[in-house]
Picture 1 (tube, rainbow, N blue to C red):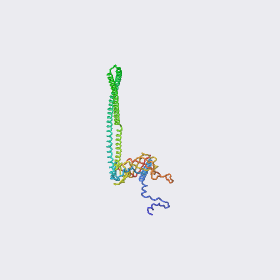
Picture 2: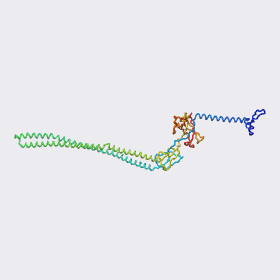
Picture 3: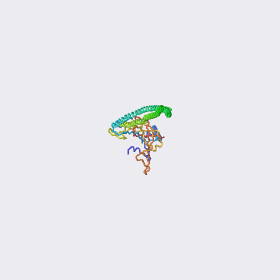
Picture 4: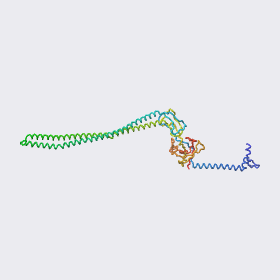
Length: 427
């Protein structure tokens, strides 16, 4: 036992009663100095007040906020793929490199696509020339039809003018028919005179010479009468011939006019032109497809961001749909916070959020709730829980909450995957 332990033992009086041990100098100074005691009380009071202040503040904050540290920065990464199967000619970017929207990332071999594009371009040019020729043929056909129609109308007019010959022939018939009655009467008179002369000659009242004269006169009158009848017949024949000729000419003229002005000629020409232009449209579609295929050999960035992963090398043949690069967007970065289901009862879209990012200690960020996922994380797992089974154990589920970052800073880049703590103001 050391001297200090001996000194601290209580002393006993002669009668055996214990006496208090003497205090050390330090204790005697604290108990005997009121100023030091007052300072200690003040310091203690300050500590208690500070603890109460921070405790009440934390309590009030916790009552109005739902917090979690199961959160991370997230972004909709862009998978860069190829639309065609082709060999990689050149790669212009590398991992971690910043890119801008529209920047050329990868150049594929384009010799086949360029040849197909030039062929399609030449085919379109040739078909356009054919379509132009077909359209010119439509114009020429229309003009030819118009000219032939006018010619046909002229033929009809000429044929109709030939009807004047029919009229003249008809007049000749009328004229010849008008001469028949006089010739018939003259012949009848000559026959009557011949009969009387024969009677008188037979009785001896007239000389025989007069009988000869009467016979000659009757024969002449008969000849005239027959000539008049023959003239009528000839005039009628001419009329029939003129009518036949005029009718045939008119019908022929009408036929030529109808043939010349037939709309089917123009329609057929227009149909050929339409078919030619339709072929132009078809070949233009093929040209557009060839142009798109040629453009697909140049793979460009869809958004501003950084290259997060590169899965290709020069000389590699890529297949459509294969991921070649991954772009992490510079914009549209958000937070995915997994809150307990017991915390989201009062949570709504638009509520403000206090954000603390582990990479930037002491820096306060702010945002707001964008959306609350309609299902828990367990729902999306490969093997969801089967609550109907007999071994069910109730576990508090986590609900993903999407949160925006309203005051992101260029000097403090936010990278997907960073750990975050969020506190949503629910009250």
